[in-house]
Image (cartoon, rainbow, N blue to C red; front, side, top):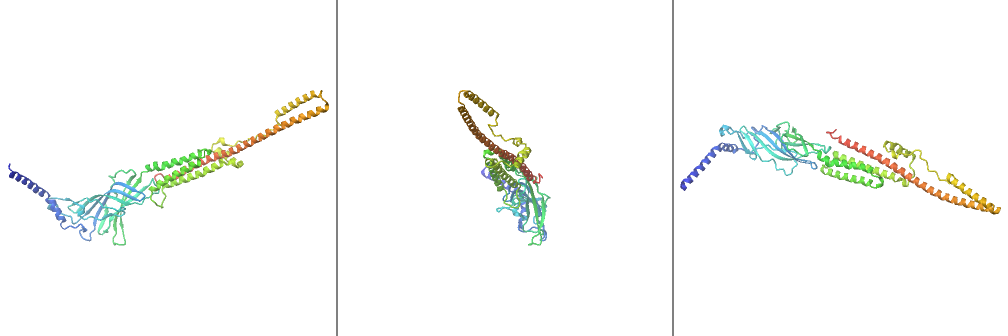
Length: 475
């Protein structure tokens, strides 16, 4: 085959393919050309100027991307589904090779100006420019994905056990109901393909239609309110905020067990108070700066901080009573009876109860001591015997003088010994009384410390339960 024949075959094949493609696309091409010939996408395609275009609108929620509680902005990924009738896009399928549906770019046809009223995005680029499906009778179906950033009023009263209701307010910006009537396709949004979210649980998505009347216009505007009802998953906040607070609060109980002589009771309470303040600041950073309500977790932290502050005051009182014996007198009788008898019995502190019938240690007296009297009698008896022997050999006058001198000297020695022993006994008795005085105040402080511990524990439990029971799901 020469070069001429080869070129002829190639040209024939190319011409055949062009003719075949032209024949296959003639119907669609002629249809699009015919429809777009006198079509304008800026003109409302109604049968008559007085007719309203009915737009059936639906939203399918795919994903909750982010919930910014501090700025009160909800970011969602949605699929928008719109259906309306375009009177300018109708044809007879018989005239165009039986074509009953075509697909055109959405930017080439008229679209209803449905916008998000509560938009919170300053850089909104609109809905994705997808193609629209058009039927021979003029019905237009347009499905387009979009990412909405909508404003949502956050109710933080029961945080972190809160439930939020965020709305997507959709409606026409320029057309009233006499020109564009917006209807919802179903009673709720489509949540069948919702992607699981680790922080929020989607409960439902009801839709409500509203006719909003404004002073500018004679006819109302039709609005669709898609309400996204979500429940917060509280497990993260329980383990990262509530449980540490409970553990730190439980550490306050140790301050009552810590001995007063350790000198760290007040330091422990202040350290716990500072740690609670840090946790409260972490919670405040995630909450919107509102004064409408106090979040439930903030109520719990504030209550715990108040209780820890009160426990610090209790600790100071216990330390004051503990060291009071160093400069104060004996506790009053009624105070001893109240603490050592009644409170010790109630708190099951038997070792701290007062000892009834305890007698004061008697003073030591040599004159009354039987052993000393026996010693004195023996000594005087021996002296008398010695004097009796000497009386036989000495003169009567000298005998009486020597006897009286020895007796007086012995008596003086005994009196000196008795006086020194008496002073020693008095000093020991004073030390014993001082120790007993200090020990009474220490026992009273110990009893009051245990009383404060039980009061703090019961108050903490009651306050915690009263706050938790405020949650609707728990109450």
